[in-house]
Length: 359
Image 1 (cartoon, one colour):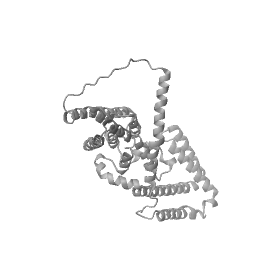
Image 2: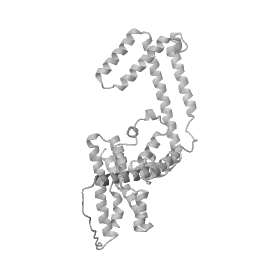
Image 3: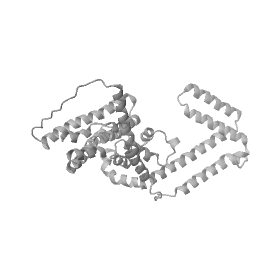
């Protein structure tokens, strides 16, 4: 019984995608391996400590004698290796095609519905006002002084704007590569010398365009955030947020942890679904970059989340095994409750102590 209760504290392969994602997002390559090893080590230490506690308080007395006849060992054959790989691969594909897929669909539905939610302001009107301000500034600062009503009336200006935009885009891509930066800056200087009257107007036009894109993008993020907060997933996350806030988690992580009760690796797909809501796939970047940019998350919170994922409630498959082996809902419920409470206590200590120490 003790083994059944402490076995879920040992890291399984389902938790590895979570560890990999968070270590890659928040820790440098030089310490990522150490961080991941420390999570495994915490699981081992907790398993030993809880086993000793259970033996002393829940199952006192001498342990039953357990005798197992070990088979003779042989070097694995190529056929047995391939067979084992095939069986494990098929098991994972079945799991990915059923449990993980179903959980991902459910999370997608919960993050996208209801489709109409109350917003704090009229975002469509805000977009129109920002666009109108941009058009007025372009007209007053660029078009009117040059005696034109649109860029199409001055092909030279349109060409300079396009060339300058291309160079600025390339400069952003090769940042830090001195040779290429110098070459692009030389091209930029050549355009300025060739078109001394048009170049300042082109630069100002691109500045206004960049401001417009930034303001519209900020509105999109704000609207997407309010839509997500008003979705079924957001409402569920808000319910559990007070309980997990002392651990450094917000409601988004709460939704991920709830869905990961089905299977721990579902946490990755859940976070991917939540953080991609309202975003452009081409501009959103990798999930680890999005997580790293979230102001709520930090290396300390990421480590706390990894430890919580390690300790809290076993997945549904593991709970089903506990129920089958113990033939008792009492011990199944106990396994769920004690592991979740233990996870909260350990992660509370990690986050609060880490915060006090300035991590």
